Length: 387
Image 1 (cartoon, rainbow, N blue to C red):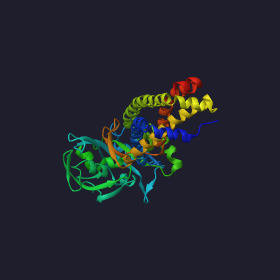
Image 2 (image 1 turned 180 degrees about the horizontal axis):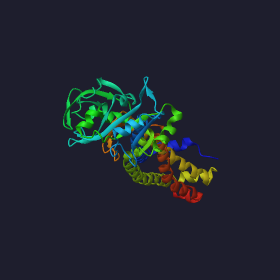
Image 3 (image 1 turned 90 degrees about the vertical axis):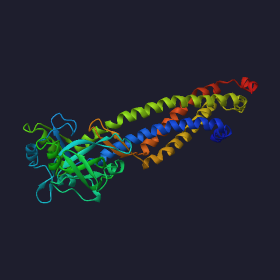
Image 4 (image 1 turned 45 degrees about the vertical axis):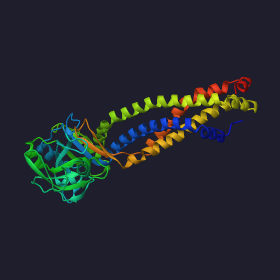
C-alpha cells in the first residue's frame, strides 16, 4: 500500500518557510545551469544557420581558420574551373575569393575596444550567403565602402549607417546594415575584396575560397577532387564542419557554468537534506502512525523520496521559467579561432529545459535519499514514543 501524493503536497505546504528556502537554492542552481546551456545553444545555432550544406570552404593546407590561411588569385582561378561547382545565372561559377582580417572598435561593453571580423568579398560571395539588407545599400566595387552586420550596428556606436570607420589606409563609409537572421554574419563587416586587400597590401595573399557544389550529391566528390589536387596545396572541408569547430569559443563558458552549477548543486543538496531531516524529526509520531496503519518501510521511504523530488521538480520548473527572458537577449563572446567577437542570442530550448529539470531531480534525489532511509528504518514503538 502506497502513501498518496496528496500527503506529500500537504507537507510541503505546511512547511512553507523551509520549503521555500530550499526551493530557492535549487531554483538558482538550475537557472545557472540552463543559462550556460542556453549560451552554448545560441552559439551553435548562430554557426549552424551560417553554414550552407552545399558549400565548401577552401583553406591553405593545414589551416584551421580563415584568419590564418593564405590563398592566391592563381589558386582561385584554378579552383573556379572545377566542373562540380554550381553556376550563378548562365555561366558565373559560385566561387568566392575572400580576405579576412580583424579590426578593433569600441563597443557598448568595452570602451577599450573589441576585435571584429572584416571580410572582403566579391558580389558572388554576398549571393552565396543567407543575408539581406536591413538599411542602406550594398558596397560598390573599388570604393571605400563597407556594410556592417546588425549586431555590429547595435553594439558599436561608431558603426552606424552613414558614419565612417578608419582602418587600413584611410576612412571607410558605412553604406549599409545587413541582416543575417541568427547567423554569425551579423558580427562581421563586409567590403569589396579587391579594395580591402589593396588597403592591407594583400592582393596576392588572401584568406579563403568559398565554393558551392552543384547539388547535394556532388559535395563529397567536389571536396575529394579539390583535396586530391596536388598542385593546389589546400584543405577543402564542408562549411558546416568549419563553423562547428568555431563553437569551441563557448566551451570555457559552458564549463564554468556547469562547474558553478555543480558547486551550487552540492549546497542545494545539503539544503534539501537538512529540510528532509527536519521533516523526519518533526514527523516522528506521524511516521509511527503510518507504520501502525500498515504502511511498509518501503512505502514510507518512497514517500519521503517522492516529497524531495516534488520539491526539486517544482523548483526546477521555476528555475527554467526564470531563464526564459534570456531568449530576448543578445550577447557576444570572443572566439579563439577567429580572434574576434561573435554576437548571438541566448536560446533556452527544450534540451536546456530538460537538462535543468533533470539536474533538479538529481539534486532532490541526493538530498532526500538519506533522510527517507532514516525515516523508513524507525521502529514503530520508538517512533510513537519520540513523538
